[in-house]
Length: 97
Length: 95
Image (cartoon, rainbow over all chains, first blue to last red; front, side):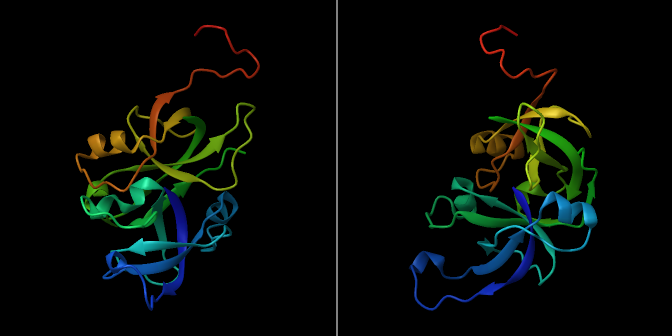
């Protein structure tokens, strides 16, 4: 997983039926620099991630990418490869460089 | 698999059921020479890795499904070993 800041939502117009019923968030990955500064910023390149948890704008989440992104739908198949796994309550971070 | 340095921990109370109550480690991928990636990653732990440890990361989602006991666990990174030492340019030597 990576850490990300919720930047917004994506509303779909027409798409595959299997994508319906899910929220899609714009998530900005958090860099080590941002996490260390604790400034609530991301700093990485934004991705779109499927979401079932409902975090608000500015909240920090963890999201998984790749094949496991669609695991929550198993055994059904959906073309999702980024999924919000959790809303981060607390993080302690001590960069080693 | 690749190397990563453990740099922290995170908790997520509101999460996928497979991650409920589970401590997550914050790590950064490390090159063999010690250079660290720009973005941290969050990984599951099987070896009791702690702050500052250099670990071996597996991207085997099946392991995560077994560890969490959930077939639908949307996670794929696990710290599967603590690295004793790592010497680049010594391929071929036995452990």
